[in-house]
Length: 431
Image (cartoon, rainbow, N blue to C red; front, side, top):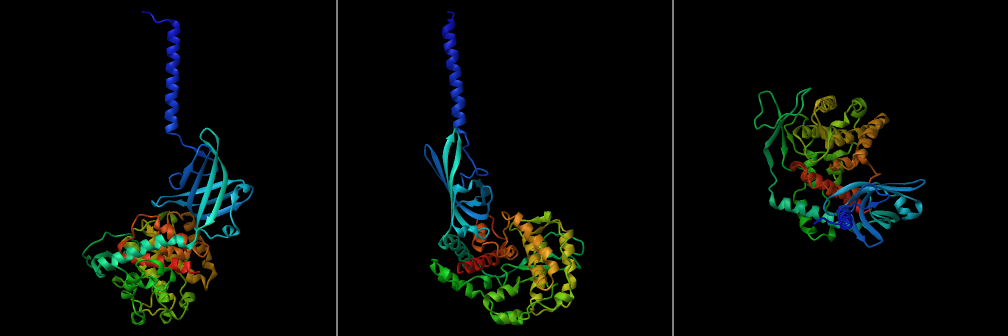
């Protein structure tokens, strides 16, 4: 039977409508709402409440910058409890922003809560109606510190602190790069042995901060830290080992001595050798800096030497009279190597900061380091870099950002880094 022309037209129209509705519902299910004024999708990082006509985003952010011109732009790192984060910028007209005078003067990485209300304008588009910015109370930090303290307790309760004799590596010769880890040194080569835990790690951990009193395991934590601290006699008698020593036992002893109040260990201040032994200005290819917690054998070798120069410059006793002449070897090793860790870069910054106190020409070196770190603020892991970032950055925010990384610290640096972070953040929290 031949289908009538009228029926054929009706069936064709129905088929077209079904096809169009299928496309519509497919698009609806896979749609991405457009929230104007925000760079990038942040729905997975914030708490989102929607109804028919509006949406409210509540986000945790590490504040970076607020610029008020024809419109207001706020930038920062938005993060969630799953250690996910994203650098974003929110821009819109001035009348839509609500914040106090305290927000204008915030340091970078200060933790804030940002609430953004959107109103529906047309299909899949939402216009920004208001932005409210409120700094967090200090109590917000307790969850992060509790996790770190518990981690340190767990480590100390389940490990015997001994030196690992099998972690050794070859000191690079002039012009050489990193060597493979080996158990036996070839004839004529020298090894560096890395302690499982750096001896002065626990000297950096806070034990007398009022903030620790609120923690569930504060008593056990304080007990464990005190058991593993070095006494003042260690700092007095164990003057700096020669730079060619075969062990890395500690790093930046003057920092940990200061934290314990052992002022006599580094009494002399900036050593006169600063003026007599000028180190060269920076000659680095910043593109070879490796971010993250993976510290290579060559990185540890460089950290040891830079730590030695730093402590000796501050006046700690030393046994190596050719200390500063050997700085050029460090410089050559960094220049000729394939890459070097961010912690080495920031250790360089600590040394250059000491020279800057007596020679302002080193300000360009520090500015270059700081500028590079600021450009890569999302990638920084090492607490050594805090000293280079300076007072313009919030210690609590740096601490929170560090907790956003799932990657564990290198074993030999684990307690050192955790204690360094805890010390910085508890000092900040008491201000």
